Image 1 (cartoon, rainbow, N blue to C red):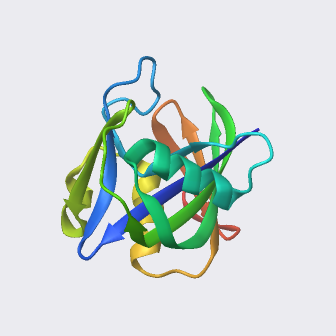
Image 2 (image 1 turned 45 degrees about the horizontal axis):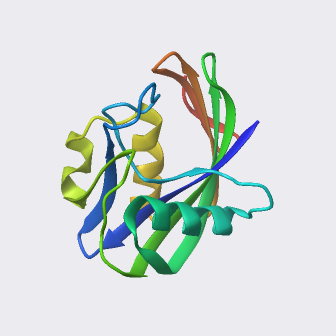
Image 3 (image 1 turned 90 degrees about the vertical axis):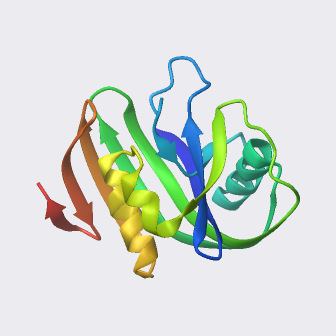
Amino acid sequence: MINTSLCYVFRGDEVLMLHRTKKKNDLNHDKWVGLGGKFEEGESPEDCVLREVREETGLRLTSWRYRGIVTFVSDRYGTEWMHLFTADAFEGELGECDEGDPVWIPRNRLHELPQWEGDRIFLRLLEEEAPFFSLKLVYEGENLREAVLNGQRIRA
């Protein structure tokens, strides 16, 4: 079981997305994702997301919310628990990332970007200000086969 944190950083009507283009053998290659990564030993979800955002962008978050947990089940990559955050305040200047290009994207254009199908579900939940949620996403290869929100199947 892998634990990760992921954050969507908002600035007005824009969200900071990472276009994953630079890492070899990247399961997210050429997709647009939020900022985050795997826990290091002894980290909490908050410790991980703060470190990962800083490493990937140079930004230090000053206001964030823990929004939910996403369980990914995959026939290729095993199971992952992803702790999902949003942030609306930060300090610092946007820098370079060795995994891809961080880009401010208008919120109303997010649906146009190549993303995992499940990411679109939790992005919608974030936009709708859903209360803290548990979302299970089951993938076969790159195809979403099932989505379960708070114990209720929403897609089969």
